[in-house]
Structures are given as C-alpha cells and as structure tokens.
Length: 211
Length: 221
Image 1 (cartoon, each protein chain N blue to C red):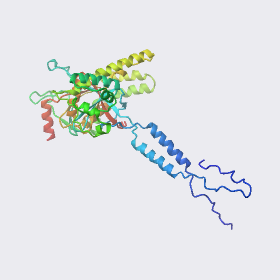
Image 2 (cartoon, each protein chain N blue to C red):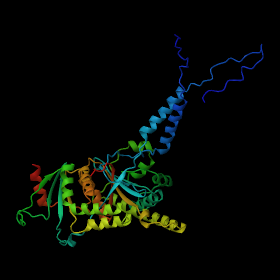
Image 3 (tube, each protein chain N blue to C red):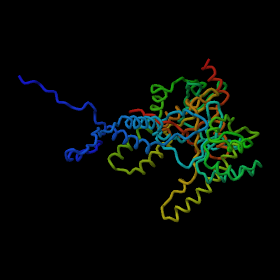
Image 4 (cartoon, each protein chain N blue to C red):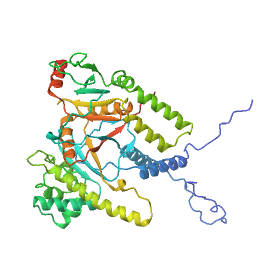
C-alpha cells in the first residue's frame, strides 16, 4: 500500500546504467505523529453534550393590593433552603401566637441526599408516583398512546391528592442548592412548584435552627 | 535435529492501518466537534437529570459567581432590531459597522454607555475586558429594557419566519418561533442574585424560565 511498486527496474540489458535501488518505503512516523496530535487536540477541545435546560414556571407577579387569600392548600410541603442545608414543614404555617391544631409550626431538618429529601418526597407524593407507574405499564402494553400518556400524567400531577411544594430561600442559599432541590422535585414528579418569598416568622425559625 | 530458522522479517512495522485509523478518528472528531463559544464569563452550571436540549431561539441571561449579569440573544437579525430600539431609548448612536458586529457578538455585560466602545474591541480584547455587568437595579434597569426589546424583536422575526414556513406548506408550531428565556447561573452564586434577575423577567410577565444545567444520571429505581 505505502510501497511503490519497484519492479520493472530489473529488466534492463547488461551494461546499461542501473538506477540506484533505494528503499521505496515511506517513513510514515511523522504523519502518524501529526495525525495523533490532531486527534488529541480534537478530542480534548470538542464538547459533545450540548447543555441541557430545566424549565420552571414561576407564579405570575401580583400587585400588592391584589393579594387575596388563595384556597387553602391541603397537601403541601414547604422547603426552606439555606446554604447546603434544607428544612421543611408540612401544611400551613402557624406562628407561635396563633398555633394550629398541632401547635405552632416546627421545622424538620433533611438533606439533599437520596436518603433525605428524595425519600421524603417519594413518600409524600406516593399517589402520583404509583399512578405514574400504572400509566407506564399501560404505555408499555400499548394500551395508551404516547401523547395520551403525557396528558394523563400532567392531569395526575394537578390532582388534589398530589403533593404541592413551596420553596423559600434565605440570603445564603446558592443556586446549586436551589437547582438541586428543583431537580429532586422533578424526580418525584411534583407538578406544582412555587418559589416564593420567605415570611418573617419562617426566617426566625430558620435562624434558630441554623444556630 | 534441524536448526530452527528464525524467519527474517523486516523490523519496520507497516503503519498504514494505524494511520488510516488515526485519520478516520481525526475526521470524525473534526466533524462532530462543536466548539465552545468564546463567552466573556466562565460559568459552572449546576447539574440536573433534565434531558431537554437547549433551544436554538433563545434570550439568555448569565449570572456569574460574583453576581454580574450578561445578556445574549441568538438571532442576528433580531439583535440588530433590538439594538436600534435600545439606541433610540438611551440616545446612544451606533454606526453601521458596530450594528453588524453586534449581530454576531456573544454575551455582553456592560452599560449602554460603554457598549459602543465594547463593540469596537476585537473579540480577543473583549474576552480580556473586565466589564461590570448590565445594571438591573431600580434606578437604572437596563436589563429590563434589553429583555423587553429583545423579546419584541425576537417575536417579530419569529413571526416572519413562521409566515414563511406556513407558505412553504409545512405545518409549523407557532410556539417554536417564540424565543425561550434561558438563565445560566453559576452554581456557586447566591440565589438572591439570580432571584433579582428572575424578578426582572417576572416584572415583564415572562414567567416560564429555563435553567441551563449539565447532565446528571437519573437515579435508578
């Protein structure tokens, strides 16, 4: 392949000048060097995976005087995020001055790991997760179509029994903490996610916990 | 006993297959590689399990570690329209070359006053220039104007493209021609910094935001 056929030089008559027979083999080492250099360069500089995006719909802003008491959220969990720390309470917020049926709200600590928030959400949102598995089974058995599956899943996530999540961050929380939490919520198939402002009473509870 | 004769072979190895392979790989990587665009800021994005690919028609706001804000938009035509509107509002003139150059620029993070000078820099100089980010406080909210005019310009160009696609007889989805709003936040930056930018979007009633994340493996059940 890389050798150039060098026959034909041998059939000359006697006495005639013979061309010097040099090796016709081309030294390919420099070419290989170059090829691998380029290869290394392209391997190192190329970025294959295009960045991904995670969409999040924020609640629309309302004017201060427009605020009306929304419907009572019966199945909600509120996360309070601080720097690498995560706290939560379930249901409504009850300040110390006006305790609810179970007394004033207490914060529970959890973490971003699989044993912490993921377990908590999987238990809280079991209704949707089991419903999703049933739908998935139907999809695998070809009882429903892809688009129907997607629609039914969105419907399922909006139901009253599905867990709703409110996220409140303090001024030390990083974007990584926030995105990590949203990520866990998406894994747990939470349909309603509302990042909202922290109230003064909650901030005090959080500060107490952080001490 | 007969002597064992070692076959006399040339000590040089035929490297042709290796070269073939090497060049095959070089060609593959050359064609498959998409280079990192030269953004003025390096941002380490947080990771998520989301597998939605970043849309091509985008308006992107970058928040770096220190809270500086950068703006970027994908469509060159829309960018020029946006700059014309911005220069009208802030009474800052741009010549034709600057307009053209702006259409192909990457993210920028400077005030309107600094912008003509910033555009005139070469792309290497831009990378080295340390700008302070686009102001977005209540007294001087340039970011809001950028997003607003950017959105309007992108909607305009999107509309024309949509009509063209319709004439061609494809069945286009109008939503594909609307710009998507992307937030590229550094994972170490404080959420309050990002929240200020998010509030700017929400003030404009743009509530559907997308966070740029790098891929992470989803948990196995």
